[in-house]
Length: 131
Image (cartoon, rainbow, N blue to C red; front, side, top):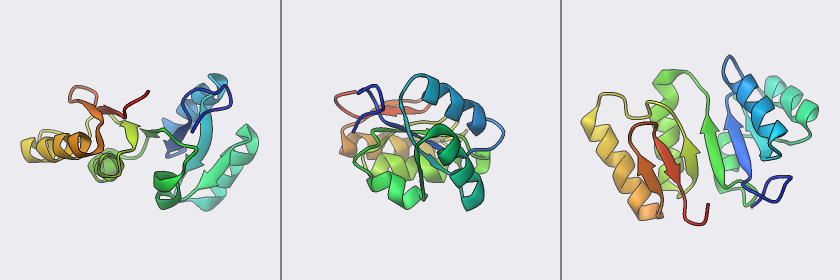
């Protein structure tokens, strides 16, 4: 469960507008271990360019190599993906995962607590124990 530099292993979900920059930055830090994108050809392109795995979201959520997810998808998908990460005890970074929906924020908090993660409601950062 480590990146190339024996630190945190990060998967970036979404290789589009923001995601391509996050992929580059986490690769530079030596933390990038996988990319996820529903456009399989795009994921394969980034995986090859950065020397990491191209995974489906389901594969990334259960991968032992990944200790944190960075969500870079259209805003309307943030909550669903972040909630999936939280409920599986997977750390994630996602801005505005709950939006203005108080009930959704409460669900994120409960999932984080069950998984032993820290939940930061300002940036929606869920950090699992040990990171």
